[in-house]
Amino acid sequence: MADADALDVKVIDVLDPDLDDSTLVIRNGGVYDAASRTLVWTDAVLPPSTPREVSFDVSVRANAPPPPPC
Image (cartoon, rainbow, N blue to C red; front, side):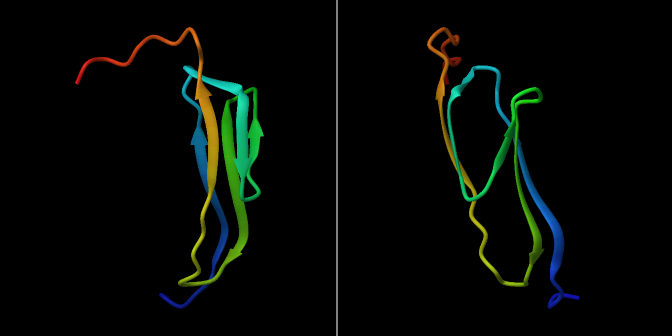
């Protein structure tokens, strides 16, 4: 079935609590649910070998703790 369409394809990403969702910019038709902090992009039909790109920008909260040292 390598040549079959994929149906109801979802790309899901949950924002980390240290990200400021008030700065969120979503591209490529995604939607954001503030209650669950979840971004979702949905394709009803995605043909084989069809590129799909999703993207968003968001800033780190000003009062977020610094990342741990490497």
